[in-house]
Image 1 (cartoon, rainbow, N blue to C red):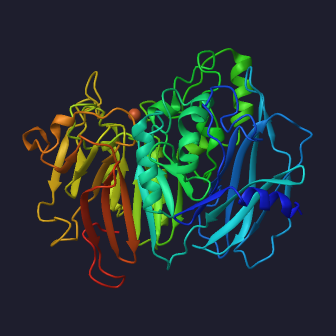
Image 2: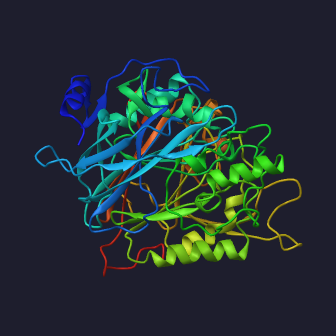
Image 3: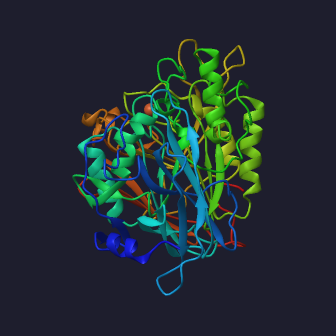
Length: 504
Ligand SMILES: [Fe+2]
């Protein structure tokens, strides 16, 4: 057991904010290659929580703690956990991590399970090096099916901007149970060096403030979708530490593709030896983790890779998606997250409509809300149904474009206040998480919107916050200064009641 003097020393410098306990350490300028957590810190990346490969709810929930250090094989690390301060610490799990031979900057990656946690409850964990506690935080386990929950969604965020920091700070103020990012997690090529500069120091900042970000991901689960900037070039000569998504995230491994070089997986480029070494480092997650699903409370979540090397009109992929959603028949809510929005009123990225080819699957399988990013603003559609029309060559893509034609059915009576039962799927673009805003002049400029768009806010940065309580859902859009800029309520009949419009 680590000596308590270490914990006492550490707790003397903690800050309690919204139920989140964060170790206070001096902030140092991030560097692409040096430890982002500071020269006095034992970490390159401080500990943060992930769900791991656990798609289904468990009677006692697990989480995983990940962190990165310099490559010191002799160091002895351990983690212990307790549900709350009245319980003794459970015996520590001793770990040695995994060496990652990143060219020019080898490091050690740790991925440690914490088990037997009460669903929906907070817990406390601490990390020790060579017997001395060096980090402590509070976490929260995934909620059970009968527990209400609260999540946030943002996108296009890891840009190292003042706006990203303000958005992250505001996210911490609404105290979510978990965080979801709809792609473009980090700019601009999904590199580990970029995560250490533009993502971890802000989403796992030592203190919560508009200037720093917040200690979010050490205390709450987070989930990411693979955006175009996360996939990066796939060129290991140009970006030798690229595809860091597959190292930094530990998510369910239930996607459709178990190995590289299959159709609809990202091609890798570079010298054969570099590709082989890279695949060895990410072999357990690439390309499986590009798509995944899991349950949280009474909801089912499906995350998809929407990059252009994926053809979602492929029958194998469509069947995987249909089976995943059909298997979630007991879920009250179904949420789907991917990066490229099928329905977008911005001039930016308007023709990148490749995900329209799965809208029929989403509708038939009862998906309630789709969250996307890519377009750096906030947009909400009316509930809608869409059937893509193939061209004469039986493909869906027009020559030289990803624009996809089709037939719309738009629910014009749903308003989210007096009529709260949508007939169709709600599509949210929430890509205003920190990267440069798109088309600010289109805010309140309805003549520039598509007929399906109901709300469009592009003159400020923002994120989406959603409260789920049984068959009621409240969605709000919150700005970087904490202002509410949109709100809707969605309800559905309790089980056994009249069928919802979106047939299951
Ligand atoms: Fe993007």
